[in-house]
Image 1 (cartoon, rainbow, N blue to C red):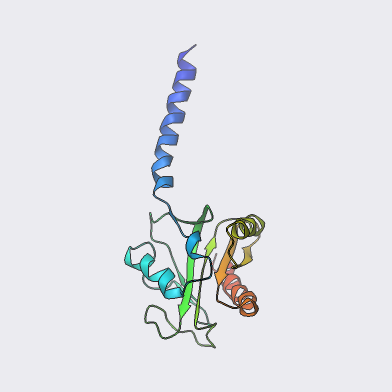
Image 2 (cartoon, rainbow, N blue to C red):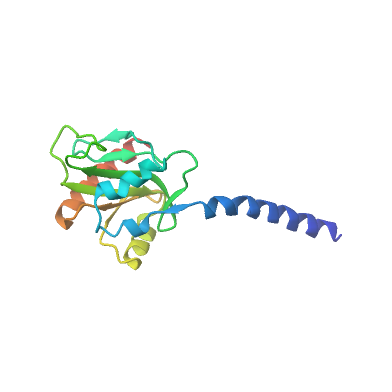
Length: 167
């Protein structure tokens, strides 16, 4: 009878042991989501270390570029897995320009896999002024910085609408 608990404990240890390396390798992005940086300073290192694809998976009319994390990159923000990295900086070859008016000189953020209420709480606890906007109810949330509270709401709305369509 003692072999069943021992077998269960062994199986549990194997599963936890398999998960820990991936959690330890996670790259947290929340310190850069303080809205005091630029899109280039946020995204260029992620491209350089191959954490995100160098080519955006989508470019919005307002020039916001959505970059897909590479397989195995394990990006997180506020403890949540990152679905996409967002950004645009005027005059920077790292970003493609959209067909409409650019959102701002520089804007950046992420889309995470979590409910907006939970993300909002974590963002505010960290002291960030980023806009937090629901993308897909209970599933995806955008955290977005563009340097102006007035523009943030409309920018995040456009990005999140497109992200929910692509899901």
